[in-house]
Amino acid sequence: MNRIGVVGIVIEDIESVSMVNEILHSHADIIVGRMGIPYKNKNINVISIIVDGTTDDIGSLTGKLGSVSGITVKSALTKKIFHDN
Image 1 (cartoon, rainbow, N blue to C red):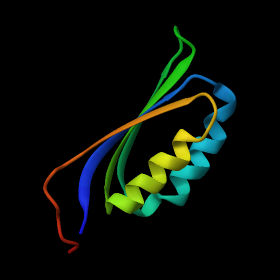
Image 2: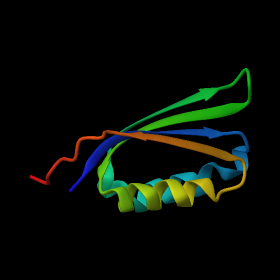
Image 3: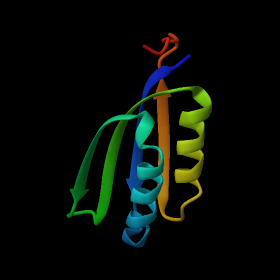
């Protein structure tokens, strides 16, 4: 049983970008879409990810991202549970 949600990622340490990309790649099966914006004036990057997965899968993604230095991660999930098709 899956939930749909959005994961917001703020990257303040540019050295962490490659680690973020590796983590996102390893969770590609739950990522529906991704938008990344480099905010050059503030020297940060902002990424929003649309996810469709179990709470465990999404928690694994956000937990791994949250452990990376220089990264802030927040998620919002639907209350409604969706069944896989």
